[in-house]
Structures are given as C-alpha cells and as structure tokens.
Length: 352
Ligand code: HEM
Ligand SMILES: [Ca+2]
Ligand SMILES: [Ca+2]
Image (tube, rainbow, N blue to C red):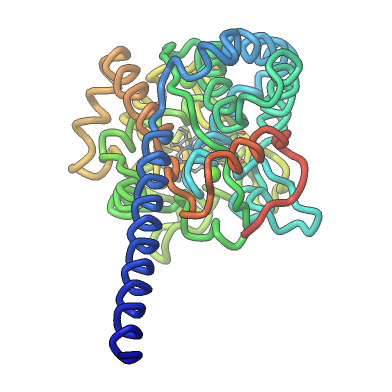
C-alpha cells in the first residue's frame, strides 16, 4: 500500500516539475520574441517620446560644424568604426579609467576628437529636452547623416531604435576594421561579415571624399613599395610628387593630409574620379579601380554623381542596421532601458 502511494506522489511531483519546465520554456521563448520585436528599427521610433530629437541633434551639429569642418569626417568615421565592432551600439563612445575600452585600441587612436565631442554635445542637448529616452547610438546615426548633408552630400531618413551596448573592449577591435593595405578580397570578406555587398563596400569607401589621413597609412606606396619598384605603379607620378612633398621621410607623425586632393571639403563623387586618375590615397582605395572585378562600379560612380549618392545612402542604411538584437538572453528590456537612460555616452566603464 505505502509503495503504491509513493508512486502516485512521485508521478504528481514529476508532472509538477514538467509543468514548471514547460512554463519556463514558454517564458524564455516569449522574451526572445519580445527582444527580436524590439530590435526592429523605425524612423518613427521617438515620435511620441522625443518628437524633436532630430532637430535638437541637427542644431548641435550645425553649431559644431561652424566651428570646424573636421566635425564632418570625424563623425562619419566614428559611426563606421562603431558599427564594425559590436554593431552600431555606441560602444566606441565608452571611456575606461583603465584605458582598455574600444576607443583605446590602436586602430581607433586616430579617430578625431571632434567626432566624440559632437555626439557628447548632442546627447547633452537631447537629455535636456527628453531625459532618459534617446540612446547614444541613435544620436551618432543622426549626427552622421547631418554631417554628410552639411558637406553637400545626400540627405536620407535615419532609422532609429538601437540600443547602447555594454561591451567596449580594446581587445575586441583587432581584425574587425579594414587596413589601408587591404586587397579586394580582404575588403569584400570583411564587409560581407556585416551583410554588405561589394557595391556597398565601394559606395561606403566614397566616404574618403572628405577628411584626412596621416602619412603612415600610405607612405610605403612611394618609399618602399616593393624590392623592384619603390613607387607603386598604380599611383599617378604627379600625385606621387605632391605626396612626397607633403610626407617627406621621417615626417612628423601628427601631419595629416587631405584624402581627396581635389574637393576635400565636399561630399561628392570626386573620390571615384580620383581613383580613375590613379589618385587613390590608400592601396585599399586604388585597388577598387585596378581590380577588374570592382572597376565597372568605380567607373559608374565616377560618371554619375546620383548613382553614387543613391548607392551610398542604401549602404549607410544597411550599415546602420548592423546591431546586435539579442545581446544576451538575460538582458531584459527593463534593464536595458534603465542602462540606456543613465548613460551619457562617455562616462563610466562597461564591460562584460
Ligand atoms: C574600405 C575600407 C576602409 C579603409 C581601409 C579605411 C581606412 C582609413 C584610414 C587608414 C584612414 C586615415 C586615418 C588617419 O590617418 O587619421 C581613414 C580615414 C577616414 N575614413 Fe576610412 N577606411 C575604410 C572605409 C571607410 C568607410 C566605410 C567610412 C565611412 C562610411 C570611412 C570614413 C573615413 C573618414 C571620413 C576618414 C577621415 C577621418 C578624418 O579626417 O578624421 N572609411 N580611413
Ligand atoms: Ca559598436
Ligand atoms: Ca570630395
């Protein structure tokens, strides 16, 4: 008799356990669905919570632009470097007291301070009007669109609703950003990891139509190219002369020169015309023309400003969608919102 009763009890306990497991599983699936749902970007994301966010950011960016043109390339490159490491989550904005955050990685040390400053100022202005609502990643995305427009580039709608990340580690940058000496297949495979096609990659490289580079990224092309030829044959000889003048051997490492020698302050398709004229500054620029697989796209962009601009917008929007929807199964929405809210772009230290 007692044996039978024990069996009934055991069965009951087992059922209870199964029911608990089933409920936990349903809850887990629900959380995942909720997070994926939340992960969708939309132009209307702040319509009810901060309807003026775009004009607030634009005002700050315009003010900063009136002080220095560097705002333009600095912010644009900041967005790119943010998106390629941990997704577009403002992980690049985090400062660490130990000097081991993403921004401290060697590949990020040449990011100009004016980009960071633009985002921090815009975040401050947004916080004053809509406290604890808008994340830094979205502010960086809006500011990037605004600097492109200020330099004469195309305007486009920015999708919003990203989340700021928690992970910002210098050690996670290596191998995630392209090098100035990359060949076409290296460029393609790195961009493909972010869902970007060769055409997207070429269009995005058009960002080098504005901004500066330090001599160390390209001087090898005319001082020590190869044992048989110190100068890269894919460089225009007149351009080589100009570059040698601007970057003499043992030049001060802080010297930076315009990447687009023709219209350095205008966001246009001159970059592609330069490539056709063998005036691409980096190996990674010129290769887009010298390699027959990518040349037709370069020629098309060099001939048609609008085709380039449309392709650039499409690629920028795609790049902006590169964010990690589910950062970890235990990052519940409420916790994320709370952390987003208290973050001021460059304070505190977040890591795993
Ligand atoms: C395709 C592969 C790319 C490579 C190899 C590359 C590499 C570089 C390098 C070496 C510099 C010079 C940094 C310095 O010396 O200060 C630079 C500058 C810059 N890059 Fe790229 N980049 C690439 C793609 C992009 C993309 C996709 C964007 C944006 C959409 C971008 C935007 C910029 C801007 C705006 C600057 C100028 C920064 C300034 O003046 O402060 N780059 N890039
Ligand atoms: Ca990031
Ligand atoms: Ca230009």
